[in-house]
Image (cartoon, rainbow, N blue to C red; front, side, top):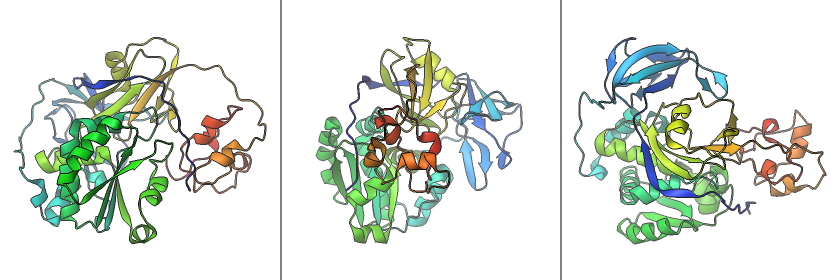
Amino acid sequence: MNKTVTIKNNFTILPEVEEYLNPDYIYFPLDENVKIIPEIGDTIYKEDPVLKFGEKTIFSPVSGKIIGKINTLVINNQTTPCLAIENDFREKIKNKKGCVKYINEYSQTELYDIISTYCPFLAEINYAKKNIIINGIDSDPFEKTYSTIINKYCSKLLETIDAIVTTFNISTTIFTISNHDSNNVTNLTNNIGTYPNIKLKLISESYPISKEELLAPTVLNKKQLAEGYIFLNIDDILNLYNALKRRRPIIEKYITISGDAIETGKVIKTKIGVSLNDIIKNCCNIKSQKYHIVKNGLLAGTTLLTANTPLTNDIDSIFLNSECSTSEKKCINCGLCNEKCPVGLNPKYIKEHKRADRSKCINCGLCTYICPSKINFKPFLGGKNE
């Protein structure tokens, strides 16, 4: 049985989505493997291709002017050159595409070509697998990103899942959500009957159950696990809907903004590539100026050294938490980190032994959270997930 912990969320998250879709600038990280498609100084349209990573294309979320490379932004706490686009606020699209009425009539080749073009990071998935898990559970107990997406796009998400299942001949499809997410439980229960191929699975609200390594063996039997499965998060499904319905690339994103340094948490819809500085300035009512920024959850997340960071597709939340003066104390050998580790590791042993096997670590941060001595185990673990 998986070891999980129930964690109470003391932050208030507003139910309404706030939109921030008009940043002055957009930034895309660069490296030696990236090809810039337009020339510096060119005017670019919204949804035009901007960068090429091998076979993968990145598209512009705004129309405007290519300013050039800048070296003042930080990604993963390292200064990284970025391509800057100045927004002209016109949202001009060169070739507007019509809306497809039925997205479940694509052939497998057509569907895969659309995924490869407009959702390139989902093209690496093996769609020949016969089982699929749709994760609708937020990865951190203090996030509401996935819950908000389900609430806002319930019928569209079900339509997209059904199209994927039908086109790729998926045998078993399980849509998982938290059993405490009452609004979405009701909404999905009322709508899922139209889609007999999709099975709704309510999961006990515990952490870190949404991790693939824990969720898959919870909802699939041994035979299904042996056959293999596709694992998609609910924001992946929303991106697929936009691609299949409107040929729209991934240019916008929903993220949770919360923490005790702001008045009220919220979920916002914004552009990929916007600076976190701009998001905080335009979307947050700050209560305390002494705060640190954590991306992707308070338990498993990473503390950022600066908000001068562009929003990338892998960021689901940012938290502004007041600076804490609590310092680490000497280990009291209580064994809680070992007892509560959901994959059976001994974080204390790993911290003290450089050659210890860390490969099973799922970076949930639970050991750090429950430690009575406030020991931060995260820098010493680090499995296969960043």
